[in-house]
Length: 256
Image (cartoon, rainbow, N blue to C red; front, side, top):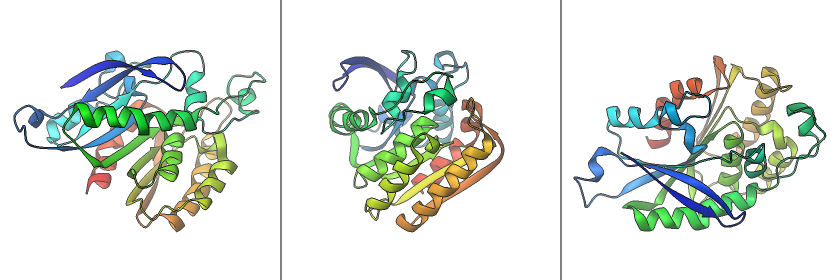
């Protein structure tokens, strides 16, 4: 079952849709409490008709079939121009506009406020509204959602103890993210998954750029997280169809 409601993201005063999947057992086993997986780009998670490019991750269908006891909370991304880059970018990148849209325009810089909102406002709201396990919280996202997921695991390792960063746009803030990983204590992070496909690309960002970027981050994470899994996925492209295919094994790793 998927329920949705609108929230005001208070740091930005922006209205946004929240989509919440609850498992089949939620209505029948009324004493049971559930772990919660928070994900970015909520419109792309559950139904193809809601997805930005017509294909979703198919998460609700998979969880129903697999009968996994998990609540999934998806917070939609901004649909206003390139605002998604601002919200999912922890730091301002003054040069990336030329590579992505051919314009001399900075992006990013709202990521800290965005993840603070998820952590300090959205999560308490969900914990109050649903039968959750407040100390059993997972986080996942793809592309820029992967970047902000990795940032969040570094900033709040005691909360996001298990996280997945899929097809990560680490290149958006490469040097600053590397420094941030090195400066934070990640011993509380129990499992961290990240990957990259061999056929990823975004405008002028090539597949090799994606691979080199992820390899550099992995070298740091392997030293900081006791259980860190990195995969280079042969032939995988940068889209929801590819992420849909590998979601089951990612979730299996996070929840084992």
